[in-house]
Length: 218
Length: 234
Image (cartoon, rainbow over all chains, first blue to last red):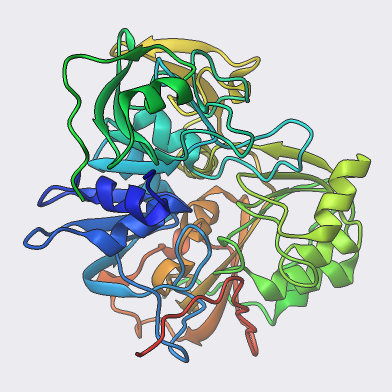
């Protein structure tokens, strides 16, 4: 069984370590906050200017001055701090953020990522994504392995306009966990019930399968 | 004695803004936007503005009110298009749009205010943002040369300010307001509460008044929420 979006988020949450500062992108990455492993402390950075982002507010407690980078109303946890946008991107560019989780439309086997623009469609902008991918040292991409037509989104070369080059470190898809290496996507784990052949068939980029591949544990 | 920056209101605060100027607006989405200055510029009818703002407002609020009145020639933003009129003008070619990475936008503001004419950043290398820009390698990584903005006016919004222009922001409404306050040749601050000098604790001030040329207290901030998201108490 391929994972659903929550399954992908749950697997990515296993990458969190005690003391991490984490930036979560919009979409599947946001769900990672629902699966923080017990016994560890992490803090979420929102690039519009806060550390210590908490869950959505209860109805009636929304504050128009307190939003996340997706412009959604949120809350702050104890120990939270607010700062201006240039300080926020100093944290990002200066590699003070330990882990960045982003969605993607395409990833190449060299770690290029495309997630901001589809030619012929209304372009909304890259927001903070280009700053994040250009600087973060640890970038995990949360994505579906194929598009609705069944075509691979893990490619030899991206076809869409790029957000960043040679920057992704790991991909967690609905089918597998893969690391970006010099020689392409290295298969680390398969989702429960997904075979190595399933991953091979869904991956257009170079795929390295080294020995027996363990099943993902959720 | 502290220098007094107080003006009577948005009308006086926007005096001197002219057709074709480059103007900055603080805010992220609709959070922390200078809504009274925007309304006053709408009333003035100033045209052909180049607006530097992270976003472009929504239909009927924020920079949307300048767009629908056809006062904007060009938007420089990182994320736009939650706005039907914006999309129409962009697709018809009436409006010029320059999309730049959010951190680069913030730093181009900060640099302008800090006397740094240009800087190198890794954001956008290898993408269409890099087209026509000088690339230099530092510490084994490619960087793009980016230039400070040059803005005649910056309009910012704060929770509290004193008559000398010292500002305190609330929560994430600080966003671009601080760096843009530094960047404007004339920076106009609108605040929810204006207090006499001496009432703010100097330790708690976010933006020093030296960056502010005009300040006024706005009445009845609407502070609209763009994406109301809540959880249930169950």
